[in-house]
Amino acid sequence: MIARIDHVGIAVKNYETAKAFLEKVLGAVSVASMEDSNLNYLWHIFTLGDMSRMELITPSGEPSFLANFLKTREGGIHHITLETADIHEAKRRLEENKVPYFGFNEIPELWSELFIHPKDTFGVLIQICQFGPKYHLIEPVKRPQGKRWRIQSNETGYELSVHHPGGVELKLSLTKEEIKDLLKDLMKALEG
Image (cartoon, rainbow, N blue to C red; front, side, top):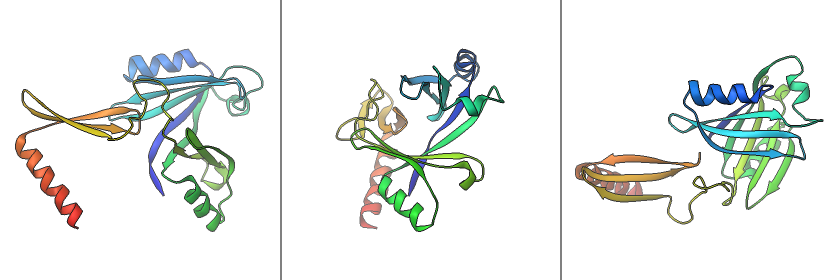
């Protein structure tokens, strides 16, 4: 049901300090950010290392749903977002197991989500989401249409590029022998 952890959301009072820490100390790369004027908050996604992602969220006006969370702390883990390929299957499984959820929101081409309250998930707010084909609206992280990979030759062999759901490309250098091994493994999997 769950494909991967998409990101960990951290709510902060001091956005500029948190942003500087992620970028300057941890080497995080900014992916996308946007202010939501309906809910009065700013979100900002960062990619780290192996394409792990963190999201900073901070109030941008009053009232903000983050006010209560930040009332007694400077910041903290607000939620963990899990990606699913089928939000309706996720809903069905939650209902089948009598796990309550809230905040179901569906914009098929863009984003579908639901939340599980911390009281039902051992103290952590869980967001389950399904990305639509137009989820990544900001270049260069927009999801590619068609093939999610490409292979091209270079001076030392070949480079296999695979689009990662986190909005970046994974690049892997391969020799001719490794390409042949990969082809064998793929054929075994097809015959499998």
